[in-house]
Structure formats: C-alpha cells, structure tokens
Length: 527
Ligand code: FAD
Image (cartoon, rainbow, N blue to C red; front, top):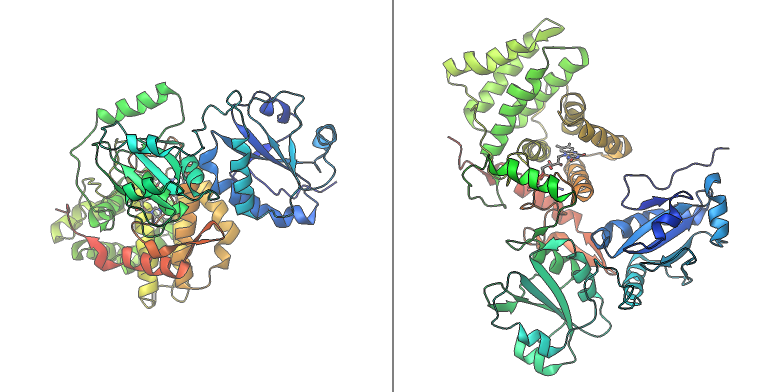
C-alpha cells in the first residue's frame, strides 16, 4: 500500500513520534509536549502541515519548556497506539504536561481556530497550567513580576542583563520573549503589567508593550527598538554584547572546542557588521583555489566544466581589486583556450602562484578573516566567506545583467546559483552541507525566474540553514545563527502579521543589493 506521502521529515523542526517512541517520550518528560496526531491521507492534515512546520520553527527556542511532535496514524505501525490514545479525527492536537505518567493520554484542543498565533498562545497558557511540582525545569517563570521586584533592580550591578517587558494583562509578548530567550546566557527576561501606574511613571513608559533594560553595570533605560514587537525585542536581546546561546553537546565537547580555539586565538580585528570585507572574499578565494580544489589531482569531465563555470562567474562578476580580477580573467582565458578535456590541478596552481606573481596579478596567500573571523580557529572562516561570495555574486548578476554576455551563461537568471550548486556539490569539503544544499536546490531552484529572485532565493535558503544550525556545535557563541538581516541592520525588512513575524521581501531585496553591493565592500585589512 502506498500512502506514505511523508508530510514531515527529519529536516523539519518537529519531533517525529511513532508507536515505538511516543510513550517513552512522554513518560516523565522534562518538557511539556504538543503533539499533532495526523493522517497522511487526510486533506486537512496536508493543507495544515505548512502551518505546523512554521509553528514548530517559530517556537524552536522554547524546546526546553515545550516541544512539538507529530505522529502519523495512517502508518500501519502506529494503528495501535492511535487507538490506545483514542484518536478518532485527524488532525487531533494533544497537550501533555511535563513529568506525566503512562496513564496520561493528554488533553485535546477542540477549538476551530488553528492559526499559528492562536496555537502559540495556547502553548503559553498550557505551560502556565503546570503547578510548582510539575513545572518544566528548563522553563523560566512566566507570571508577571510586581513593581517592587522590578524597581529593586534599579542601580544594582549584576552579572547579566535583565529585560522587563511591560504590557497589558492580555498581552502575550512578554511571555513569548521570555521563552524566546530561554536558550541564551547573559540575559534574563521578566514581565510586569502596565496596570501599575506608578511603575510606568518611574520607568518613563507611556505606551505598551515596552521593554526596559537593566544593564550589568547598574544603569537602565527603555529598550530602543524600532517596532515594539516580539521579534524586535527578542532579536535586540539576543544581539547584546555578552549574550550568547547556551550550547548543546556535552561539557567535555564544549571544553574541547574552547581549548582548541584558545590555542589558536589571533589578534581580534574590529569590524562593522553592516559591511562586507574584501579580506574575507579574497581569503575565501585563496582557500578555494589553493587548498580546497588542490585536493583534486586532475580535473576532467563534469568537474572541469564546473570549475570553468565557477571561474567564469567569478571573473565576470567579482567586484574585486584590479590585480585579483585580472588574475581571474587570465585564469579564465587560459581555461577556455585549453584544448584538453583534462587538466592537472598543479597547472592551475602554477598559474595562480608563480606566473601571476611575476606580472603583478596577485591573490594574497594568507588567510585574513575579518567579518568572518570566529572566536576559535575551528569556527566560521571559509564557509562564511563562501556564503558571502555567492551573495555578492547574485547581487552583482542582478545589478549588471550583461556581465555574463558571450560566456554561454548569459540570459540565464540561474547562472550563479547553478554554478554555486555544482561547486558545492562537487568540491565543497563539507559533504553533509552539499547534500542539504542539493536537497534545497532540487526542491525550489526551478521556481527562480529572474535575477532578483535568485538574490532572494539564496537569502531564503541561507536563513533555512541558519535555522537548522541554531544551537548546533558549528555555531560560534559570539555569532549566533539568526534569521538575517536582524532588525538592527534592516528594521523595514521586518513586519508582523497577526502575531507572526513576516519579511517584507521587497525591502529585503533592496537591503541585500545595498549590503552585498560593490560600494559596501570595505578594503580594510587587505594588504
Ligand atoms: P554564515 O552562515 O556562514 O553566514 C556568513 C554571513 O552571512 C553572516 O555573518 C551574515 O553577515 C550573513 N548572512 C547570514 N544569513 C544570511 C542570509 N540569510 N542571507 C544573506 N546573508 C546572510 N554547516 C553545517 O554544520 N551543516 C550544514 O548543513 C551546512 N550547510 C552549508 C551549506 C552551504 C552552501 C554553505 C556555504 C555552508 C554550510 N554550512 C553548514 C556552514 C554554515 O552554514 C556556516 O557557514 C558556518 O557555520 C559559519 O557560520 P557563520 O556564523 O560564519 O555564518
């Protein structure tokens, strides 16, 4: 029987439960659960699955308090468990408290409104239904603080920031921001109600919701965000200096990572995150040409074609310094003139290293990460520069549609992205990354019809990768994976629609073109 249209995969931020795992997962779980029992043949369930995935993504940072699961009752293996739990209709939403026992079959949500915001608020209410005894250990207090408590923070030094969201009784923003910041160290978030007029006066707050920030040094001020929305508050706090994501992985693993980094810490280079650095782009090209590709002894067939297209795209579009662009153009001419179907990579290296140096066409052979520097040697660097390079290239392609004329790649809005896809799939040292990227490309690259859409596609996919990697070992604690650009970089890129964060894509496009445009590339630190 073929009914396995898989509505949810391991890539989605939901936990896929089965008869083998459901009971043991729920039994004495440290977190609460919201589980959707669905059926993969039910039309409603299929239509609803994007909302459920969006919800799970939206509350991913809440996972030490409440988690989102799915269980497919149409899967033969799950028939019995669905029967045991008395699931008669699909989808059925069940809440399970933390620390439940095996006799707990959960509480069904029967409301007709299944909009993301409604369900998210229900999750908050459900969390608050826990008692002191069964409160999920990872979940911070959600009830409002009294004005005395809040005022007692004034003028006190502390090891961390304290943010206080001041809001009306029915508002969920405070609780949502508290939960959003759960996985972060360096800040605690509390909420208080606006009904206390004296407090409002003392804090100088006249409209709500507002946020007030107590700094570690004892000073305090109203939090300066462009829009007083959940996403703006949360992003602001996540980006405070000294605030970073707690890491998963064992303490031992973390220590190892830190030690590894310390042995190699270089001098920190100050940089401006609203700029792109030529040093990163050139270091990336250096690494790509002299290290990553050099592991291939010879290039032939598809590999050679991929390499040629890559050099074409970079030579024609890279808004680099003259010596570097010239070098790339010379490399391209050489590749195009070559009659061979196979080249030893040493010949490329010779050209890049020796011949070039003589004629002054030179690509620095030292690595100098600036915007891509990490808190340890093992973090950021090359992959960061590769993303940056491809964002720059998609933007250049959109700004100079004729640049690829007579290369065989003209008139193809996908030229840069397809080249990137093939480069990543063929040569990128991180194979898992290549596999994931290929899956994303297969799914939606064909929908891209213009050069502008190509810019946005890469941005969207990069954010998808950021979401997947948030909290993972490859995240640099000093550079948390966020949905980018953050509100401080582009306030107009962000909007809220019925409580859900939405991007203003027209503004995002404008921003990307400015950020990755030639005039925003800083030459600082290039020798
Ligand atoms: P990066 O994600 O490398 O981003 C670099 C810079 O780009 C950021 O500092 C920011 O200024 C900007 N930026 C961030 N988001 C966006 C956006 N949405 N649009 C435009 N600009 C943005 N690592 C894994 O562990 N698993 C994987 O599966 C994986 N897949 C990858 C696939 C590709 C194609 C690439 C190039 C890398 C992949 N990596 C993967 C590496 C990972 O994505 C990061 O590059 C790496 O962890 C370094 O992260 P970073 O903090 O420097 O930021």
